[in-house]
Image (cartoon, rainbow, N blue to C red):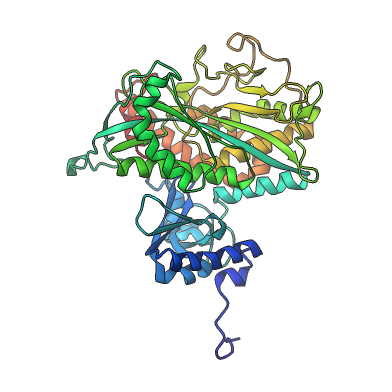
Amino acid sequence: MPPRKGKAAPSLVERHNLWTAAQEKAAVEIERAIKSQRLEVVRFSFADQHGVLRGKTLLASEVASALRNGVTMTTTLLAKDTSHKSVFPVFTAGGGFGMEEMQGGADFVMVADPTTFRILPWANNTGWVLCDIVFSNGKPVPFSTRAIYRNALTTLHKAGYDFMAGLEVEFHLFRLENPRLAPADATWPPEAPEVSLLTQGYQYLTESRFDMFDPAIEILRRGLLALGLPLRSVEIEIGPSQVEFTFRPQIGMDAADTMILFRSAVKQIARRNGYLASFMCRPALANMVSSGWHLHQSLIVTKTKRNAFVDPDGLSSLGQYYLGGLLNHARAAAAFTTPTVNGYKRYRSYSLAPDRAIWGRDNRGVMMRVMGQPGDAATHLENRVGEPAANPYLYMASQIYAGLDGIAQRTEPGASADTPYETAAALLPKSLGEAVTALRADDAFHSSFGGGFVDYYAHIKDAEFARYQKDADEGGDPASITAWEQKEYLDLF
């Protein structure tokens, strides 16, 4: 039935009930902010399957309508591996996904989450909003990693808990010497930029090294605080030109959204000021040290807001089962916690990085570190397995689903490993290919993530690993950090 005269047709958001009351209120505030702050453009962005932001920039005059009707994007973006090449036959029946909505490079729609709106301090008169993705018929896109994480949070909430996470992220910050913008460098993927160091490293947490870094770090720090991100500390790491940023714990979606915006903001601010920030685990440069992403986590009882891991004698029974689940599914979860070829070069014995699925009390050589003294209200687990390039929605969802399975199965974690590199335990995967194989074989993840998503994600990662193997067979050294990895990951992540 056509709308009555003088009454606008319902928007996409209204037709499919895509917003909460809080989001509707936030959308009104965005329109006011555009006028009061005299914004000229707003960036609409979504996090793709790799946790990389993609989107479109709209003129301020178009934002009010775009907030409620969405912004179209091509579904081919969901078909791409880390080289940005499509690895599904998008112009065949079902687009290679078995879905009519994905066929022929059709559109999906970015629908803004107005509660995520920010004004970007580094870009003139520019706003930014994070989006969820749906099809034009209002159906959710099954490959949306933000939606995957939201489903995990919902499952956890039904069990009576909320997920609390704190971020501890290492990355490299270089001076950009040559951005490689000559036409001959525009290969696919492009040649990696040439960089130099800001510090020589190997003076872990020394104030003099930090002060050498400080002029560059100050620019990043001020930008992140202006965005409202809960930055807690900025630290000098052991490696050359390596730093670590930590954040206060957050509940639910906020922690993953913070990681997405943090990485993107750091890379953009750095580049505008003559630096290159890279969340690639181990760049192919002389004397580099691997970067990790340690994810601190606990479960909060929804009704009482009590930390469910606290116990007078140490880690609670529920916390132990949760920990047992993380260890039991560690090999399969590696495809999410360590999603690049490069990340597996970090798993080395006696290196402050894990190489097997074990836990310990306050031990930096284990995969899972139990933090907090008995009865400590801040008792939590630190997963030391992740790389900083991981998609946070998938990383965190894998923790929730593995932990819930451990609780359901009452999985015991075993004894604390005091000698982590000598304890007999399941080894972490040695390669991305091995991790994807473990993911495909994990029945619990097939059930929780959905078999369709596991098959989709594994297919993308298979394509990435196959290209790497082809390069290695043609003269690369699989044991070293290759030029292939440098081109693939240094500037992307």
